[in-house]
Length: 175
Image 1 (tube, rainbow, N blue to C red):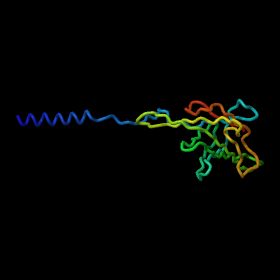
Image 2 (image 1 turned 135 degrees about the vertical axis):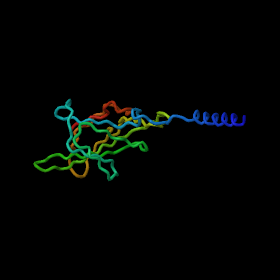
Image 3 (image 1 turned 90 degrees about the vertical axis):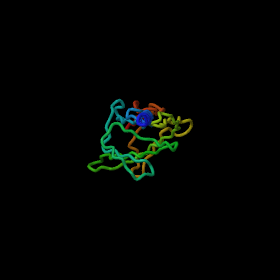
């Protein structure tokens, strides 16, 4: 009888242990998280033609790290979630009579943030809304660097001020 009680007790404890296990909370790769800003490049002379930029490099102002984007027609730029603006430097190596001259233009994005709960496994994501220019400089603010007296970017067009996903293009750059 003691053996039966001991066996039932052990089985009961083991069953309780198995029932108390939870499945792992993992954030699936397909779950949308904090989106990046999507930028496409277009030819200024033919505004409907998506164009590639050769040898593009990117960096956040104040950072020593440069991202080698290479030859691209679309880029994804992360915005800072702990600030209300992010200033990106875009370096284009424009060919000039046999030599390649770097030309740095800066785009400063000003925005408001909104935090949204995704799930227990994924936590929160931050959504961005580009500030509308009301008597202030346009958003984004385009300035040139010290390496060239001219801008390589001719025009910046904002298509979508709400940065909530990476399915849509947010900015068009004409060069």
